Image (cartoon, rainbow, N blue to C red; front, side, top):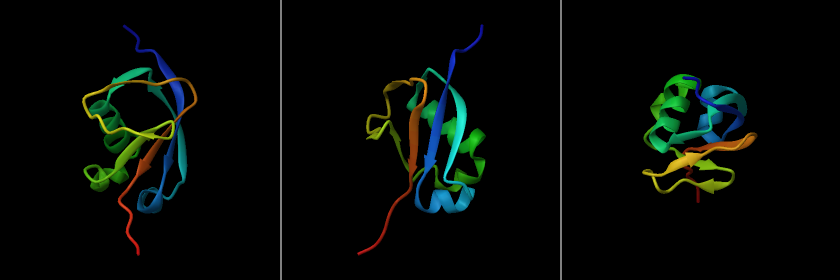
Length: 90
């Protein structure tokens, strides 16, 4: 069985951008997946250099933070997934 995939853009912010040495990456991603599956794809396969940030980053889908980690995500073609690390400052 083939998994239906769509093109998406992963956008990196802050220290994630510095660690990966890129600001964004275009990839194909399954149209439907769990939050946990999305994290595993990003931090363990697509951008494995970001693994140290996995537990502290927030993910956003099309400019909306994903707060419900039990949700099933429906990803449309050309969606934007943001990797947002903790920020500091005053």
